Image 1: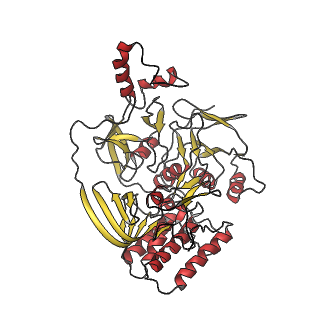
Image 2: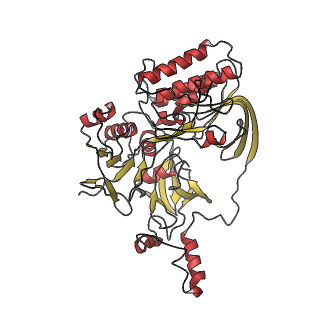
Image 3: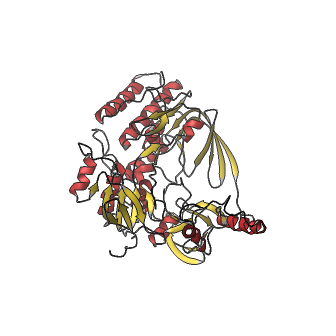
Length: 503
């Protein structure tokens, strides 16, 4: 088997424009590193084939770029003296100082990883290290040194933090295709609308999919996702929508009191109506070795490739024959990489999905009914081992599905139900996408996982319904038209309407 080829940074992306910024020099553990001004630290290190970013708390196994969207702890590092920073979101800074945490001497070569070899099955720190009694203080010191993440700085970090209060008619959370559509619809009659987005730019998944609107809808735009999101942002600004990017919602209280935070301030928002377009998260399929550096979720791989122009690997194995898997396979091959195989543990359907059939026609091996045993490689992937085959690869992407993010709807008091079609929980809504909490609406992938145009139409319906609920849409015709367009599209793609809460 040939040696794995390091990940490659693209000079230009054949399908979309790249978001990079000016070249930046920074240091990791005192060693020079390079990236770009808008590029996350984790992506810059991955592009230089420095995949190991941290170590696990217990066994000190290698951890690297994984979710790519700030939902896990695999990329925790110290940045400019502040511990536990998610480097998949933290951009490179000129002369920035990045440090490894909880490793000896560093995360790439960690002597404490011997625990993974010495205890291959289980490390019982509660019963195995209690005798002889006189050594317990030493055991305790070693265990405490091995566990945990970063340490608090010895000197205070110079940071200014201020509080800001806002009042708005409608607050939209999430600036993906659903959130952008909801904000546009809600502001169409002059209502004051505030749009909160955790990323530094708007668009959400539109930025990760060069041609996102793969839909049978005749009115779906056929253009690059980033360009469509930028045009939507311009329209919102002309309509007077306040757009707060880089703002993470951290809590919802009494339905319409929202707490959000940026790097420099705490923002308190009081709204009359709230639209939650919080999106969906990648599902995690655990198996031996699926936590190693070089194994990542599909959303993170798409972001790395299509936003910043870094290939996940030269030979990529994809677990799951899902829509995300097929889109990623298309983009990896277009950028010069190779898809070693798409592997799915389910049985082959009687009628293959169109995207899977397209992948097969391009020569991508698709394996159904495969039993995954483990990822070969102690630090980084060298192969994906099946029960009856070995697939050489230098990166493994998990694309086993997505499920709605329901944490914020739960905190808002919305009733949550289980959706067997999506295999996850979601907010219960009525015909106008209002949840069980008054004037709280759900839209987009956070309601049900489908294509981006479905998310857009659901956002438009939620925005119209919020207007109607606040008595700013006296004419029922726009609301009825939005509802009919949404339901017609669901029928077209073979999805049922989600109506659980009585109108």
